[in-house]
Image 1 (cartoon, rainbow, N blue to C red):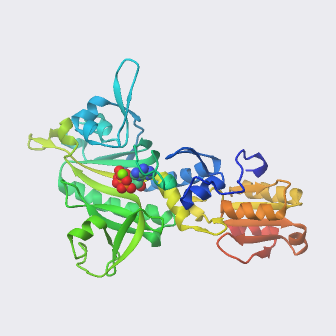
Image 2: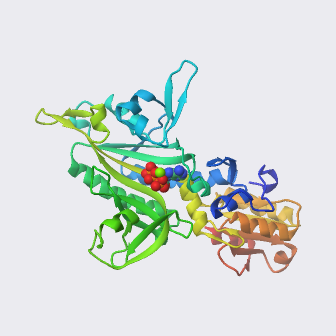
Image 3: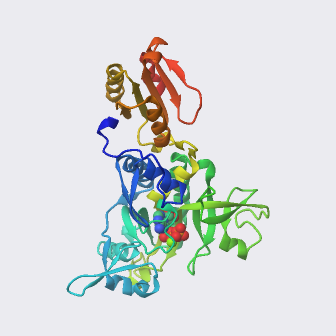
Length: 408
Ligand code: ATP
Ligand code: MG
């Protein structure tokens, strides 16, 4: 893509009304725009990142049998009354149409997915299975000051699994842990992300959060120095020992909850009467698990972890482009390189604009594309193009014909 055609622009200054680094940088660089507190638009660069994250999640969830669906955000009040959450959920957005019909803007989708599944299952042979979606959620969050880490409207991957018994749920739950580790590893957060014991509510002993360590975190976790699992604040107040290995040496860190997994057991199958006949002909209630990841929160977390004083530093797997090609008065040669890279399937943002070198470099550092390639009279005289990683200080001149190999 040519930067001269990109309708968004990098802004000179960071937005004054944002206190979080993720929102400051993402807004300044034109990845997102704030519509109102807790509500953001995704702009071309930001949407490219979210789409990358979405594809990583999709591949990994498909690999454990997830079937992708798309459920509505607008949901009937009756379903929410059945589970009692119409009145008990404080952050539920309620809307009413002109005929007086009341609805909820979904903060989560158990109230839709359970009756949906019920329409299609009638035998034990239909189980187990899992369905998931990427959908916007709506929550009346009171403290919407962490930028896209805590939106009032935000994108979530929510997966729901359905099982005949607890043992089968346990097996799937264990598999989902590996899936989550893979997802966060592919997003560049392996070293910072800890599986964390959290309260399981009234239905199971524990749930698990995936917490990424960064000073911007709203949560506090206690990392077991023996097994690398962590426990959250709530669990720490209940126990002295690591539930995994019995260790007693913990390190306290601030962290962001990027995902969580939860055994719902029959919490939602019961109110809707989701049950089938088992092999013995008896009525058997279905047990469920749910598994969430916030996509915008994940993008914001990556920014919190990967930035320096000049701007963002995207890990390759989620970067909006692989290469930032910058021409300094050499648009013809740069155009040739742009065409060659594009032909090879390498995604390039080509800064073809007629502005100063200083401005181009500064903007490039803010945007944070992992590889910068500069074409200038100087680089051509030195034998080619200048290549530099955003994460490194030193650049190097390489021959144009070696560029594709280097980038692959
Ligand atoms: P938190 O404790 O941070 O409010 P939660 O326990 O309410 O999170 P879930 O309901 O389990 O979160 O949602 C699943 C995932 O969705 C979370 O792990 C997080 O990644 C994301 N998420 C939750 N609330 C928000 C929000 N307001 N904005 C952006 N992402 C969110
Ligand atoms: Mg919450």
